[in-house]
Length: 231
Image 1 (cartoon, rainbow, N blue to C red):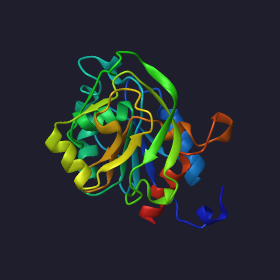
Image 2 (image 1 turned 90 degrees about the vertical axis):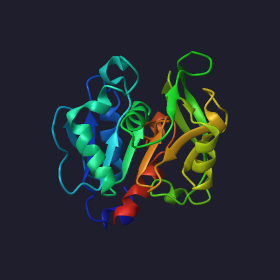
Image 3 (image 1 turned 135 degrees about the horizontal axis):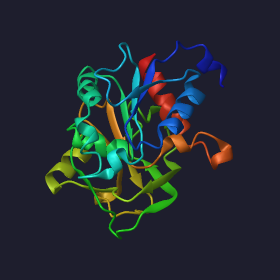
Image 4 (image 1 turned 180 degrees about the horizontal axis):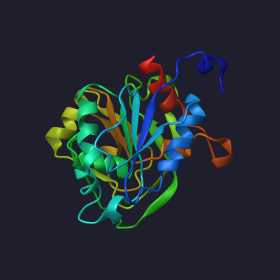
């Protein structure tokens, strides 16, 4: 752990766990590795998240078995109502893969995530471009614009109409793009923020890129960016 990080106050974080989440432990390990403090693991059936949170992560997986529509049932879980309230107060929220789908279904992010263009599950280490470092999730990347972050999804094809896409780009809400589009996403979009900039949804898995033994550490700076934004 870097000495500079040890001097910072503890970041209070939480990971929401839905039935079918399978990346919640990866998320917890990544957060603890970077921040030095384990997050609270919050069950979807709880009525509220802990108070005083600095960061909330909605992990990947297959919440409710992807029944009805990916993320649709999870977006109506009891805890999601409080997640929406926390977003409205400005708490940084990261939704990864299924978490991105949940954030869209909950109305926290615009657009839709459809079946991949080739109708196949994709699982690979994907080249990713940091579109802007002017967000609470990307500030630590600075001039490092090219990353390798793992992906693993079947419904990651981001869609929005032309007007919305122009608005997202014009207001700097496109955080990441694919260097080699794996799923047909409009304008190669891999991750977007809300207008306020405190909610990020992305299909690639930064929590799987925090350890050299797992193939790379390009996800570390995303969590460091969040840490820096709440100090």
